[in-house]
Length: 76
Image 1 (cartoon, rainbow, N blue to C red):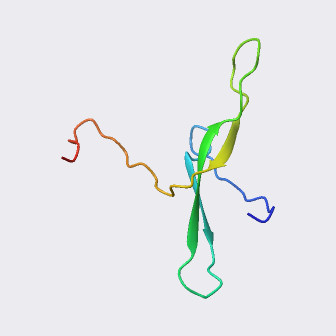
Image 2 (cartoon, rainbow, N blue to C red):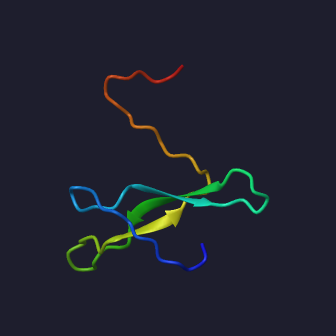
């Protein structure tokens, strides 16, 4: 990233999205590269162990996990 601050929309619960995708244009004019960032806790307070907020960390695998529904079977 180049240091810009991007706005992040929050959902109805007030939390930011679990995954954030940033498309980076290709210098050759091809399809853009998508960088994937995961929301993780920013830290915890020492006394009450309350969460201090969120931060995004880079996910080098660039794959979002699919939702796991209770009625679906795992692939063999």
